[in-house]
Length: 250
Image (tube, rainbow, N blue to C red; front, top):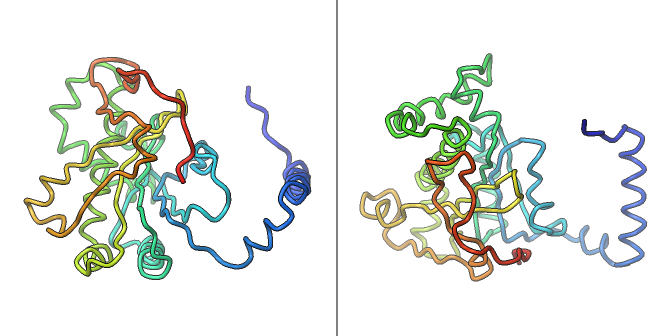
């Protein structure tokens, strides 16, 4: 059974971390206090197992983060819309990453109709997503693979929703330093990030994406294997190619 830190240990860990940080980099906290200019906005799940900065080995100040249950993008969520507007219009982030993950409790509870109260209302878009892909999902024999496929589909659906928001569309149409949008899926079984392919060409043809949007995957991201989740195995995220060693995204 996993052992968690006590409340007192958390405070001690903070003091120890600060002491070590100052010893290794005396100017770290002064620079941190001078302001932020993060290149990335991360839209992720509130799950306690996915502090994305830990998995990517980045320091404070590099990620601007918004998290909620099942990494959903809601056009009626003022909290999210405020974060997005600030990130796009004031911080001028260069990339927006929708990051889902395998073994997502929100996805599983929604699929199994186990959500109650406000969580049930919040996860309604997942129920709709499941209904839209019911035939395909029913052909996946493994429950684990089926749920992970829903997580992948959810990342795609939320990226599509993001492109429909006026703050994003107006920024793209302006042609001035608009952010590139990406889909990620974090595999909790091995810790690797999988790039989720977004149907950019189709979305452009149907007008979901403004015609002038240019999407180029940054070179650091090429180290990750782009991979569509298999629907025929209980371990759906095993890469078919040799995976190179991870390097931090800069």
